[in-house]
Image (cartoon, rainbow, N blue to C red; front, side, top):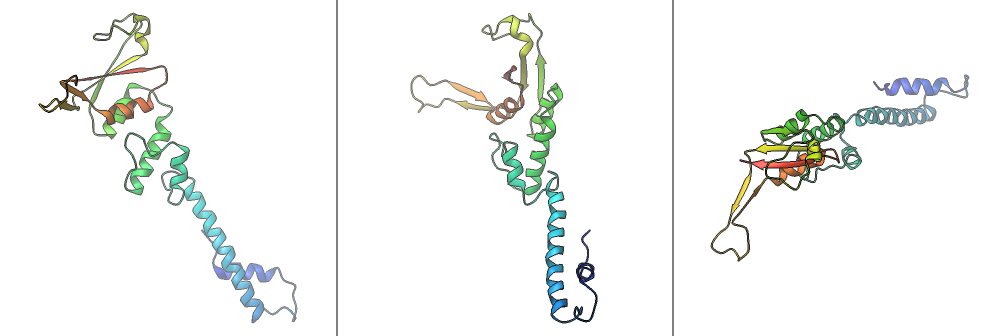
Amino acid sequence: MARSLDNYQHLLLALLPRGYAWPAEGALGDISMAMAEELQRIELRAEALIEESDPRSVIELIEDWEGDWGLPDPCLGQLGTLQQRREMLTNKMVGIANQSRQTYIDRAADLGYVITITEYTQGDAISGHPEIPTADAAYVIQIESTDNTIDQRTYSAFYGEAYATWGNEILECALNAIKQSHRLLIFNYS
């Protein structure tokens, strides 16, 4: 808690020599009060800097924090409120070290999706993906979700286009952003 202006002025005047040539009133008092205002301002800014060092209470330095942690999230773009930005920053900082199944489930839930996860062991054959060697199956995580976007081909579509495409770019982008580099995520939509 910052000292009052009177406290600062008293401290500054106490540094001066004693005697009739150094009166606390008049010009010297005005100068010491101006200096006290500046010292109090500096102390208040230092206290604010302590608050800015915590991502849960940051206000002025939010853009610096986001830049350091690679935010805004390329999957979601810029979030609207300061509180949403703080939560995204805190989640990024806390979630970076944790790579459990629950991390993926929680990240999907933060985005409003419900997923289930299947992990494989070495030697497993992954259905629908013969290109993945069974020796590498231990590095595969299969994400299953019912939340997808289906684009059906219309009559005005050009020859050679797919009859339908499906997927969920936001979910896939967000989960691929937090996965470990040696992992392969496969997304199944039902």
